[in-house]
Amino acid sequence: MESTKTANQLYRESGSTLPFSEWITQQKATNVDSFIKNEPLNQLIAEEKEKLGIATQPTSNYFNSSNKVFGLSKNVILISGGLILAAISIKIYQNFKK
Image (cartoon, rainbow, N blue to C red; front, side, top):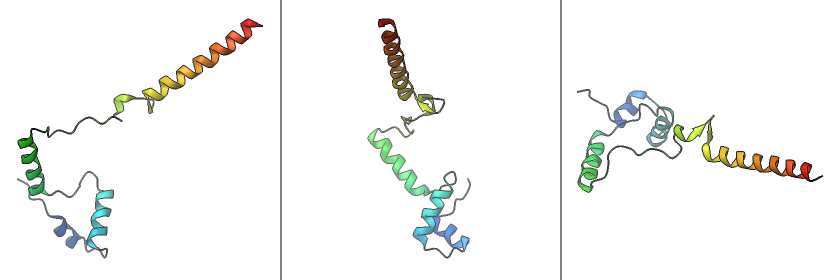
């Protein structure tokens, strides 16, 4: 099993001149994939979730890519399309009425 270092150990090894709180905030912001892990805390949280019957897998995000078309929300596209169709229908009706 791979031994992970604590945030304190990583901070000391980095030789940073920043205070620890600023350094860890910077690390969280820049290294999202290699987020500093706290195994005992993660294990405790998992055990408590199991006791409470809460799913440990993250739920799907509302803004998931499956809810988007060309990078836009499906709801935005549907509303925009409806407005465009309404505007075209009104224009055709006005031209037909003349």
